[in-house]
Amino acid sequence: MANVNIKFNNKDYLLSCDDGQEESLKKLTKFLDKKYSELKDKLGNIGENKLLLITTIQLIDDYFDLKQKVTNQKRKLDDISNKFKEIKSLAIQYKDDKDVEIKKLQNELDGFKKTIEENNTLYETMLDKTTQSLEKIISNTESLSKIQ
Image 1: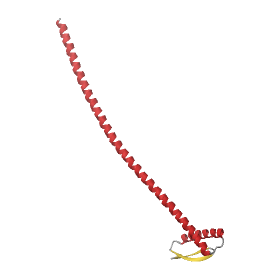
Image 2: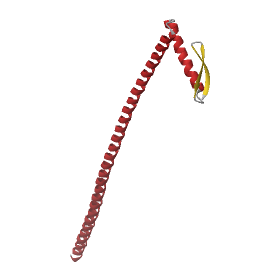
Image 3: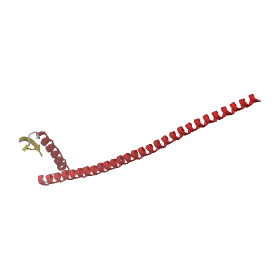
Image 4: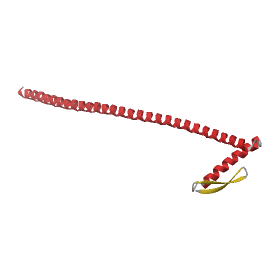
């Protein structure tokens, strides 16, 4: 334990604290002394005990206000976190839906390609048969011409 000399309300006090906490205790005491002095200047000399009680009540009021603000901010952060999770879930679902849609379109495109290839092959076959038929007709016509 460490001992610390502090000044409060123009009086010296020797307080004990855990080792390493000396500076923190000095800061806290300085803050408390400042609040106490402000109230003393504002309210006058109403007695040390009453002034200490009022100072404590004000500090506790500040503490509870701050605690409520922290609670409200935590609630807001929780709401934002929940909304983020919801948006993330929606984004994942949207991506999954789009992946399914892309797969479906890819399958349709593959089907169109296959149909085009089949039609192209059919066209080429028909063109070959037509060419062969025309060649036969021309050949027959030439043969008939020679006969006459």
